[in-house]
Amino acid sequence: MKRKLFIIAALAFAENCFAQGALQNDSIPFLHRNHLFVQATVNDSVDCHVVFDTGAANIFGVDSVFLTQSNWKPKVNGRASSGGNAGRTIVQAIFTIKKPTEVSFGNHRESHQVIPIYQLRDIAGRYADGISGLKDIYQYPFELNYEHSFMKLYKKDNPNLEGYERIPIQFEQNRILMEAEVMVGGRSIKGTYLMDTGSPGVVHFTAAAAEKFQMDSIPGKRSVCDVMRNGLGNQTNVSNIRMKSDYIVLGGDTIKDKTIQYTPDGVGSLGDEKMYLGLIGNRIWSSYNLVVDVQNKALYLKRFKADSPENNSYDYTFKNRTDIGPGWVVHSLIHDGDAARGGMELGDTITAVNGRNVASYTWEEELRIYEKSVQVLDVKGLGGEMKHVVLEKRADWR
Image 1 (cartoon, rainbow, N blue to C red):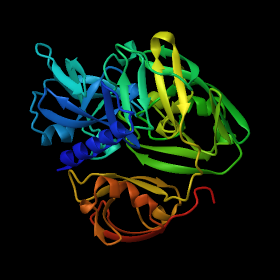
Image 2: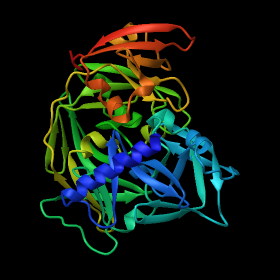
Image 3: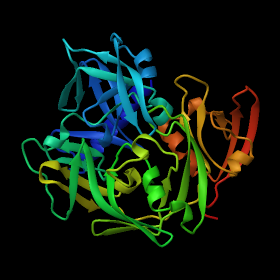
């Protein structure tokens, strides 16, 4: 049922794009739901929705639960080394050397001989069947259009760059790097950053950058957020520090009053990284249409959405795991926040919101849960005990 709902939603987005004249031949529709979800087909027979991640380079990986529940039954016959925001680890893998696995994204088709198997839904929720960076996309100019929710590889023609600003980039180890500046508490953190569409946030600094720029000593309000499974890798729980930035400069554009974060004990791509200071995520990119042209070492940006103030929010997040259990698993909690004081803990399961069983929520309704001014939560603790928690939406920086 969930796959059918996704396909209907994707088609609705595509029809809307065609109506606006934005979706072109060879374009691939996506859904922006914190992550970017793209519909894919494996071996012309198995539909899935895949998180598009520029940091995933040439990888196509699948979620372990999706693999168990789908009609695709390949032989799991090997292991592979995998890395991400939570370090490196060894995962099971599917090796199809003699007859590579074919994966299609719209009109884009690619072959894979090694397919790692991840616990991806622990990180991105039940709608994440896999992860991909689209193989070899950097051989051609590549458009990522957030305004009309499509991406496109320009294999034959050239993108229309009228009104776009050109920003120089570097391309190293399948990573897109650029210069930017983040001002926090009057301190400038200027240097090289990584473009990361796999990150749903604003800017996430590495542990090395936090130490180099002594971010713990920057004046201003901050909050500590405990997070389960911060990304792919072997690190389970981590504490992120959140602060309000003064502004962020990207090319000739300035973005004001956004919440950034850093991880003092980060590992993997958030650890002792020498190539970049931090990751720039979808809460920045989603205000722009952009074209990546690796061959000419350029990123082209065109803003279509003005900055909006960060509104009141709740001090916890969840991941929908109704694919394997009774509800939504508490994924992050602010230290001494309302949710934590109400008795919620990482790993608890939210079974109902405002008297309604969470299993009955559609994907769209789930996303709008955070918009409600009051939440009455029924929560099942890790020990099986039931909790009744009432939360009010409040200002982030009070």
